[in-house]
Image (cartoon, rainbow, N blue to C red; front, side, top):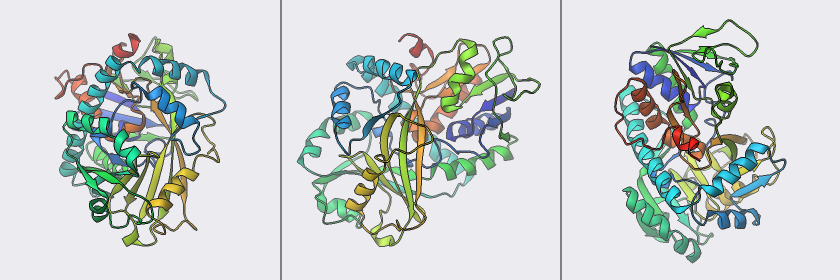
Length: 418
C-alpha cells in the first residue's frame, strides 16, 4: 500500500518504521524542518510502564485543587483558557469515575509494557546506540510521601512491574550523587525501567525507516483533509492533491484541525510540560540514570553529558511563552538532590512542550471511522513510553492482523461514547 503519515514526532517516525518494515510505500509529512521538533524534543525521557496511568482518577480533583493553590504544585492553570481547555476539564472530571479509571488504566499499562518490549526489539534489530541508561528511582522525601505512595505500590504489583521499596541508605547507594542535606525517607527502585533521549532515538530510527524506503518531507504544512477525497493530501498553501491508499494522522495537536472536515471531533487539549537541560559539571555528583521527586512530580535524568530536569502540567496560557513561575520548581528540585552537578551559568536550554492529551488518558490508535484514514494520537505525557507499541498495533490493524495485545478501548469509539 501507498501510505502517507502526517507528523514526524516519535509517534509518526515509529509508525513509519513499522509500516516500512511491513513493505508499504511510506511518505511522511512534517510541518517543522526536522523530526521530533515539538513534544518529542526535550521531554524527561523516562520509560516506566508501571507509572503510565490516566490523570482522570478518583480523588484527582482534590489533588489538582491543592496543587493549584501550592507555589510548587505540579498542575497549574494559566490565562487565557481556550474553549477546548474548558471542554477538556469538563470531560476529564467525568472520566474520574472509578470504573472509567480502572478500564483506562488497564488499557494504558497493557500498551506501555508492550511498548517497552517493542522498544527493546527495535534497539536490538537496528543496533541503535543513543543516550540511555537503566533504572528509575522514585524519591520519597518524608512520611507523607511514604503513606501517599502505598496505593501506587499496589498498582505496580497489579501491573506486574518489578520494583523494590528501599530505605534512604540503599537509595543513596543506587544514586551516590544524591545530596545528604535533603531529607530522604526512602525510595521506590524500578530496575527494569529506563531513561533515554527520545529525540535522538527518533532521529536514528528515521534513518533506518529511510533505508527501508520511507520518504520524509519537511516544511510541509498539510491542509485539512477533504470530505470528498479523505485519502488525498495537499499543502495548506495550495498544491495538487496527491492520492494515497491510506492516511495516518500522527500530528499531535494539529490533528484536530486536519480531521475537522471529516466530522471527527477530538476532545484533545495541550497540556504543557517544561524542562531545563544543562551540561554536567561534575559527573560524580550527577544521577547515574533517572530519579523522580514524588512530592513535586519532577524527574531528573542523565542524557549523555547533560542533565535534564522535567516536570509540571500546565493547561492554558500561550503556546510560545514560558510563564515566569513555571521553571523555579525545576531548579529547586535539582538543587535539592544534585547540587552543583550541572553548569547552570551557561548553555542552559529551557523548553516548553505541548503534550496532546485526551481527557480520559489512553491514546486513540486505529481506524478513524472514515475509510482509509487512521489515527495514532493523543498520547499526552506518555508519548515516548507508548510510541513503539502504538506503532506496531496500528501497523497490524492496517495489515488486518490481530495485534499482539488486547486493544479494546483504544479505538475512537471510546471517545464517541463519552
